[in-house]
Image (cartoon, rainbow, N blue to C red; front, side):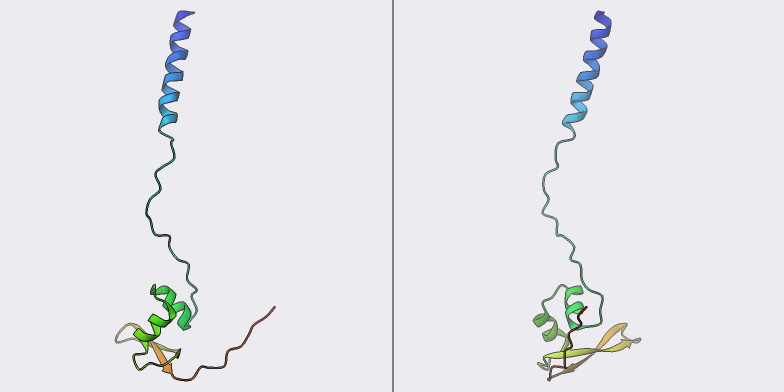
Length: 96
């Protein structure tokens, strides 16, 4: 019986050591990835670049325009082409 007790004690000690390794990890200061829409609209483009809409307009439309629409893809520069405009386009509401 003493041999059985020693084996049982060793198993319990081993299990206790393994369980202590299961402590919750320390929280990291990790940045949570943002989920951006994939549409070809300024809001989605700003999100993908990690900018606010206002910052994106300043970067993309340096002339101070307040709206833009997708104009295609430039093969030479490998970048999106945005057509900047001063007037807001008519916005539509899509409902179910």
